[in-house]
Figure 1 (cartoon, helix red, strand yellow):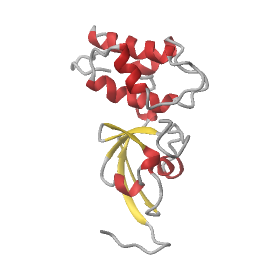
Figure 2 (cartoon, one colour):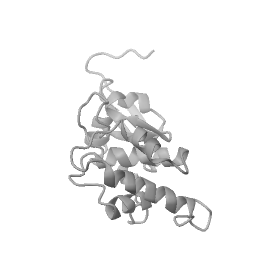
Figure 3 (tube, helix red, strand yellow):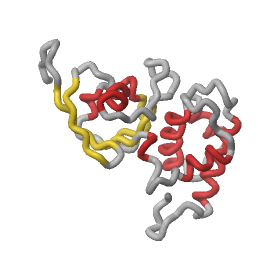
Figure 4 (tube, one colour):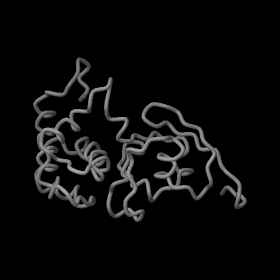
Length: 174
């Protein structure tokens, strides 16, 4: 176990969206605050700071994680994907496009976290049922949309992937 004094900082080195960040942080700094304050990645929103609302969800080594429940020092050496990492070549990710097409966002506060959970979810469930989507979404709070558009967007993207509409020449889903 690492011992540090109250004013001491620890270097954290992580790969975020394909870029390596090395910053000195207090051991108690949350990953959500690290992403926003130290890395300038403000797409990760902070809502409840208790892991309940899901707004701060990011992918850590491919798994959806509430970044308000994880210390930045715990992410040492890991790969993190934030909502900013979804777009490729200045084009929105197909899931982001589906959210737009299905009017699955209004104020947009919860959207980054829902998108990140949906990325992991669709990687696990190639042909999800509406009930499975609702179960995944039960970990997210949205006060604007009523979830109908969000469910439709995730279903739409699942169908596109199943039909091979978002697959590049290498066979990777894009």
